[in-house]
Length: 231
Image 1 (cartoon, rainbow, N blue to C red):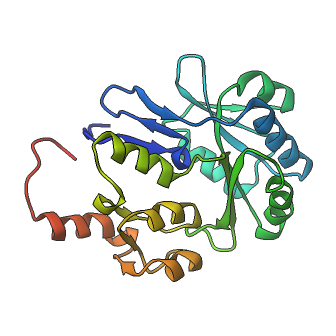
Image 2: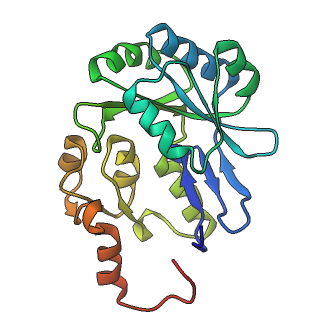
């Protein structure tokens, strides 16, 4: 609220790119209906609570989640409920409503997620990321979206629109789902509390989020120039 940016926003791990000024969709990579229903079904079979982001008929994002969320998932749902419509659904309701599913997020103990993701990686047409939360100790994070939908492919598509390439890009990230983008960009940075896989792959370092690391970096690179509008 109150923030105006000329740049588009890449969300849902690269499955959706939005123009923040008009709200228009610039790029979408949705999962197939069969694939999204199968992910939801398998998650329920493993007694997990899938959280799915989907587009409705008016191109608005809705969040559909399974029953009985655990404590961490319930906390996540509460945090996004401030700006995101939520709906608890069973498998049949999900199949009716999620005609354009963008991505899934699952939060639980790592061993429980690993069992599910062994099955998901065998399904065609999906991109999966399995890591650990950098915000809650001992919590695993699993994410699923359509094959070819990741932050790097979305950023590359945006760069081509402006005649740019990865050589023009600077990327920041802290978790495994950020790795494709971090490896694509010419300059990449992560905070010291990033996931171990990210720390091993990325040489650049910035201050942690709690110390406004990205903002500090941009100020150092761009100088203290007052923007024409709030950013």
